[in-house]
Image 1: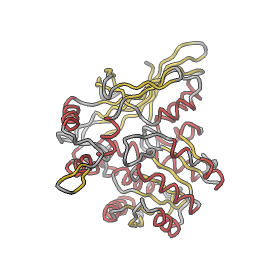
Image 2: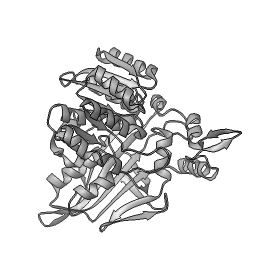
Image 3: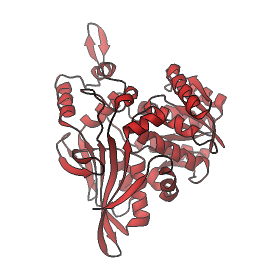
Length: 395
């Protein structure tokens, strides 16, 4: 059995802690740490009442490498599961290197002062983790995460060659608010307001934000408008899915959401730079974040389903194929089980499966790894039993 330190007590942290507690044969002592320790205590109390498992809690500022290192030294986990803010990834990786423990996250690093996310900062840790004999697993959420494993599974088991991949993410649920984001508002809005970008025939192509749309029929949800965005898993998949000619990422948005977003952009509320407010510097997007509902609070009234998958085209035995590998998750079921909505659930469950792969030595190695670089079969065998069943559909 393995001791685990979880950093981050939002919706995803709640899911991760619940799912770790459900698997006592793999995970022994669980410590949940956050800047706001009361959030940790609330999650720990719910886990205790549902699973009879005691979860230790701790207060930590994950921006502080020395303090995080000291916490890891005190807890002595086999690995750290980082579900804090993407801004803190590098600091937590540094702390893991300082203390000799493995690392896992669900989203790649973003600098605070620029709306840009790419893997270069974390890939730069390859040599340091390799020399330390430690493993860092990047993006073990759903997208990135499950989507990467879907692609690796298709490459290994379903196709001889893959030509195109379209990753399609649909949240068909309704939380009852006029406008809210399903995870950290600042991160969410920064992600969808930047330029769209996709990869085709060996080069990256940029387009204006939200300028390309297709209607897609999502299993158990139906037809929805999906908009082309840039998403981090594209960057690693173009390197690891051999022979790939084109890859894109799409996410669904309703017209009411887009109208709110457009107005907020037009009045400057999505800016990340600071403005002077009567002598006080204020970041508009951080102020907006304080006004919007806490994503962790959305689950109670959330109804509907998420439907996320990879539409993959290629050849097998000389025949052209087009398959959709996907999962459907129910918001109400997720909330009943973990106290979090399905967007948090679909991110948290793959983090626990990834942690199990590492703790059991099923996935091993020294260095920094993206999900598709590892054997997809044991992950796919585990994840369905853990709460995210997957399906393959001919298209």
